[in-house]
Length: 258
Image 1 (spheres, rainbow, N blue to C red):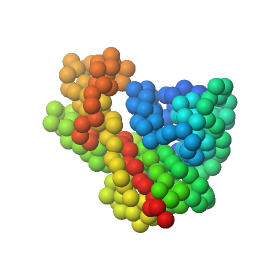
Image 2 (spheres, rainbow, N blue to C red):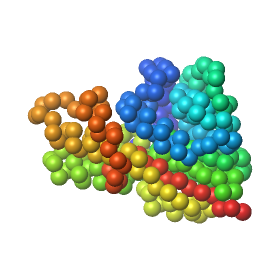
Image 3 (spheres, rainbow, N blue to C red):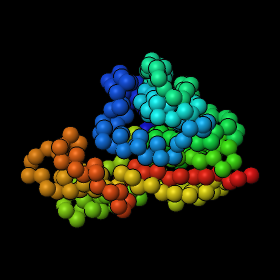
Image 4 (cartoon, helix red, strand yellow):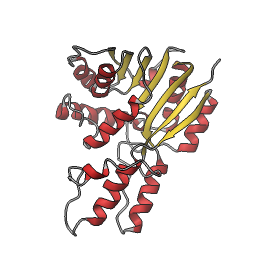
């Protein structure tokens, strides 16, 4: 087993103490974070009943209810993260949030939500069997014609990114120790077995990652540190999302209209 849930919990407790309410919690590249939020906004509108799986410190949840008049349930299995999320000031928010400590593997609701989204959460489960269990519960929680916005990491994009890096003699970027990236065909097939068809693939980070993880290190002078803080990334972040060069992407699954 690559990692344990206890190790994941320890990691996110440390993230809670280190980053507090900041958007850098769980991902330090704020350009990536902002692009994630913008991409998620494209699937939301006023009046929806929404569930967020793995809300962390509530950074995205707050952004959602400030932008949309939605009814949002936001879950996370880290008590420290939920405590932080509940401390957010939501004065002036257009929607409402209920933060709750809960493991996605214990989710047990049926046909309750118009939209469910996860943001790099399912990839932190220990095994593919656990991931399938979570995805099955998410599928069941969708209303007929409801949509699951699956913002997670997949091997396809990482393999393509590393192939591009190899062509300019850069070392491969490994899968993070605390992640179990998903195999896209297996994910699509399993979700289809749960009555959810994949209706869209959104590689919204592909241009930025190609720029910041291939072009930037390839053009840097030897020995110069490459970081996400480089001002050159202000250009790369505006590149169109061509191709599939980032492990993080969105797959949109729609439940059958029963």
